Length: 76
Image 1 (tube, rainbow, N blue to C red):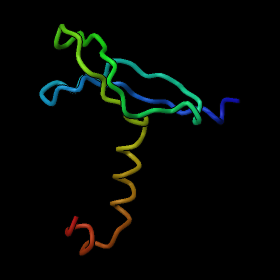
Image 2: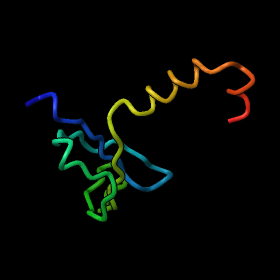
Image 3: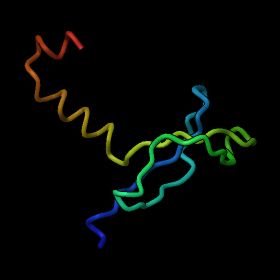
């Protein structure tokens, strides 16, 4: 079922790059965010360890932070 799948973005693990390499869909029960796999980064032009993140995570985090009272938001 499509509702049981999550999209995961795969990025270059180098801090100076962090280029988005691809997006994959996986079933929730097969989801694995930590990985030691390597993937070719066209920006760095080399094989790098992949960095995985759930699609929409940053946007969701920002939305939640915007709902906090200003005093709590400033303490983060």
